[in-house]
Length: 123
Image (tube, rainbow, N blue to C red):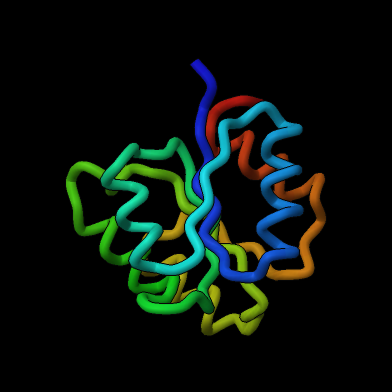
């Protein structure tokens, strides 16, 4: 069965490139454009991994991550925070809230694909 990746980002160009990248890597891709839509999407069908932007409308990425980590059902979903916020304090906060990885934009497509595959055990 094909593994699924939920992309949570409100920037159309980023969404388009991530969708292409993850599809090319063989994953089923779903899109959410804000924090509330992300949580609704997880409720509908649990993804195998989430690429989560921090600066999204509604509930921000930190809140979405924290909400998922508090739930027994979704606490184990791998989350890669993908954001323009590159300060060390922001990275530490993201990881402390439960993100498995933290990638700053602009990102290397090959490095991001590698990290996704590692977290999904597809190496």
